[in-house]
Length: 99
Image (cartoon, rainbow, N blue to C red; front, side, top):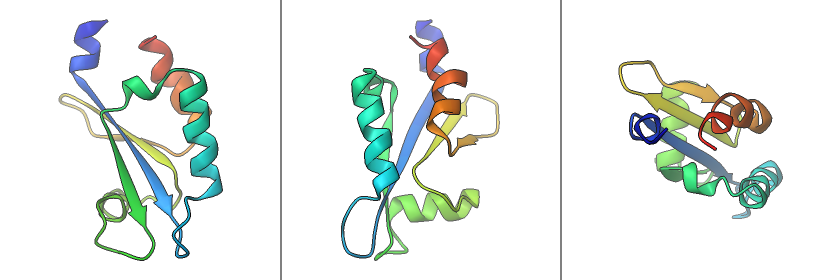
């Protein structure tokens, strides 16, 4: 399983709203990741800040044409990045194989 983790990179993108607060769905997903001890599988967390279109998360969302947050980007060597906008689908299809 260790080889699998080396060949895969997981990015979580969370949205910060115009008022500076974290979106409610992002908080929920973050809590689920903590409760299930899944944060350790994330390689990076980016912030999509509504107040800053140049923020790393906003740029990634735009390049992947993703309209919803939070979202996960799973990059495997030699494959196109996969985007997950639903935590449960991401957990079932990606994280289950890592645990």
